[in-house]
Length: 203
Image 1 (cartoon, rainbow, N blue to C red):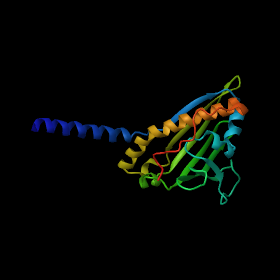
Image 2 (cartoon, rainbow, N blue to C red):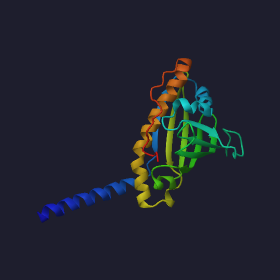
Image 3 (cartoon, helix red, strand yellow):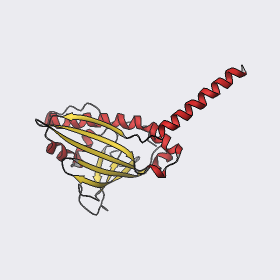
């Protein structure tokens, strides 16, 4: 019996060590979709915050912050992503870090607030929108997400972020499929994935 317990403890310990080691790898959440539309149309679509209500499965809407020093789309622009239509509950803010029209846009996610998990609110993220012109009026759109600075987080925080990658990739996939449908179907848009009334991060 003692040998069995010792063996179980060893297996559990080894599993934890492997998981923690895996979590230390610099893993970027990423998902792509090919859209039957020119890259300029895809870029312009995502440059309009009003469209987020139709494609985001987590946030109800996005709006520019009054404190933003520049207009939406410019470097330094500030906006807030609201979980709910009444703007109560979970939200986070985003700042445009870089913009290269028809190629890439980089955003910093910060001020994560009113979630079910205080630890998650300590994170800041870098979000990437990557646009690749495939020719023949088609575009590959990629969403990527990463911690803003891996050096400032503890081993445990790295582990939590690594675990959350799976939820992040799921959300990227659903959002991108909604974006693809919105752009391709236009006025005949039939949303593949609805806004989700329950999120693991809801307080």
